[in-house]
Picture 1: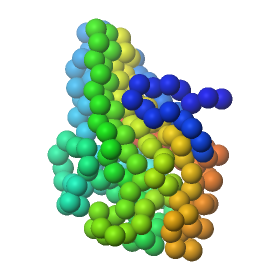
Picture 2: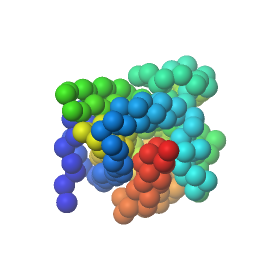
Picture 3: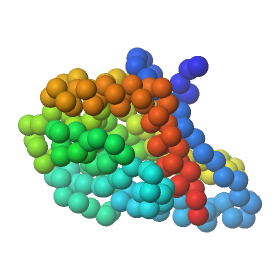
Picture 4: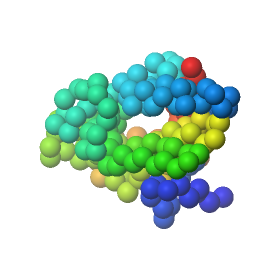
Length: 200
């Protein structure tokens, strides 16, 4: 099985990958208004867990300087992730990603927004190591799209490899979680997000 080609999503070169998608059809007369609701939910990172249920990861949005924010995300911002299970010692129990790209595409019958993230250090520790179970080569690419009368939410993981640039206990933890991700456990968490964002 090959990774899907999605415009502006990095190509899969090595390591693990996944394509996790959910869709919801609407009447033609409803689709534009429903996409506006989806956009608001998509850009409200701090609310993602509320949309996705108690079993999902927790997502918190931080500025480039590490301050909690509630605005529309920008390139250079960070997302702190609290996944179910043991967290990193490096970052007080959390995983961190940096928003490295935000893209918008629009044609006659299609519109999409994409947030691409890479594993990062904790922004409160300028000299810290990558605080994530994947290394810096990995990306998580979260997209919403309107295609005709269909709304779609997708998460596309690319080039996923364990982060071994860490303390011993974090190395063990990162290997176990990354290995689980590569066999599909992480996809369950991402499916909660893709379904939850469309659950309105």
